[in-house]
Length: 232
Image 1 (cartoon, helix red, strand yellow):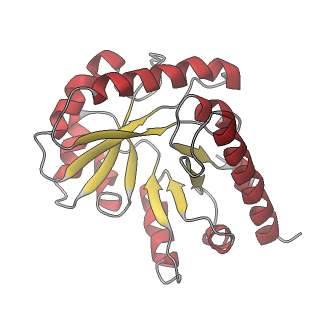
Image 2 (image 1 turned 90 degrees about the vertical axis):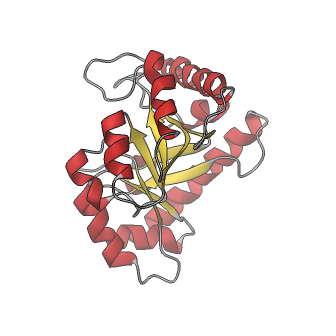
């Protein structure tokens, strides 16, 4: 098979997994959206996935996002870009106003830097549910205060929460983290705030899609199962 045919076949497999997991969890068909993680993949790989019907793509590096947007903006149906990686303030210029959704906002300073770009921007808050010292994300106890900041900003909207389970966690080990994020979302959704509408849960990757969907994921971020391994 060609590279494009392999990507198309992999996408079909991932979509079938998502559909089966939706059914098993009693979820409505199409209630979970697939974010194809295309970081470190080529623009041609994204084109192949576009040709196979994929629309939403996740990038983690500002300049790479910029370059792929430029390469693919003339496509008949351009990608919907999401920024899924950690975002440094000095890279905000490549991302704010350029993507449909930023997944990993984790501080008031980053919120303000994004807002200062002056473009409407939907965001998710990354939560460090496991309390890992080496991982970014707001602590669960500090989530409410960060959500309160959205009410004070002109351009930003919070659409939900995101997490990355501990490195090396088995799919079943990740379940408790997914469930904890859902519980945090449910708790905070009961506290009305301007600019905050917590409908999205971004969680689940290639190895644990089914468990994430069972625990309420609305966005799953899948790269390896679609494009194969990457160098970094």
